[in-house]
Length: 342
Picture 1: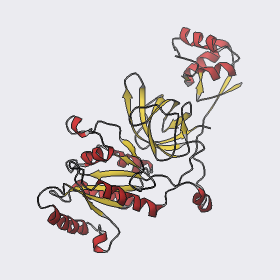
Picture 2 (picture 1 turned 45 degrees about the horizontal axis):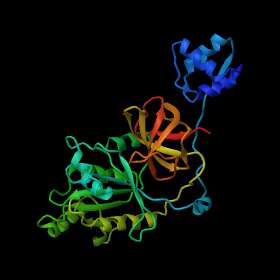
Picture 3 (picture 1 turned 30 degrees about the horizontal axis):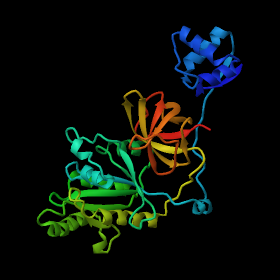
């Protein structure tokens, strides 16, 4: 029998069966399973139908994509530093999206429908202001993503920025974020938002005490958690917040291999107009390239397009880079690990 991998394009299947790509495409159409092009992925059922029609015996090979072994401490020390992946968490009304908006330097929050975050869930901020590395920020319209990641043992964030509005203080969602940070042993930075409001400085002292009650000991009290007063709407304290993130990242010494088959985590998946399934993926190791065959959870496909947060096309994406991937056969779930099939 002819060995055919489960992840197979029309062109590759034609080659394995000794057919012309045109002949295979015509046969697929006559079988009621039209394929767009030679690079279109072919499913198990169609492979078996084509084999039956051509009188060939095929054996389907399961594709096993497994992560590469983790580098040793010595190997890790030789790898280049990469930007931290920072997740903003906090109560929905505490200015989390406005702060992300201010960091991104665009106006997403103004265009939100019913207060639900509409834009891509991750973006990068370049190095500036004397900071050697930039940072990648992740937003979630709640904590569903992190619940899903906990379930699957995935870990996509290096640092959590806890956004707390000074006029509201610690809320249940704040406590939930603190619990999550402790559970995954992720360092915290507190962004005390709305410092421009009357009574801001007094509110900082009150918030510090509330956080202490939640076992979050701030630097001012001899602990390790920095608190940065900010105003998302007035763009106050943003540089200080980025400095604080950079300092935490420096202590974490985050390193990742920029080459080899990519490994990453799916942050979300949506249907894109004219593009099919679009999955936002955070690359964590290696390089993801256009044309790569990938698996993510129960789904698989071939990377047709790689888009950055602005919608510009990329040829490849390395560690700590968030990208939108077009080409998955089914919708991967948030928290699924994405691996390139060698």
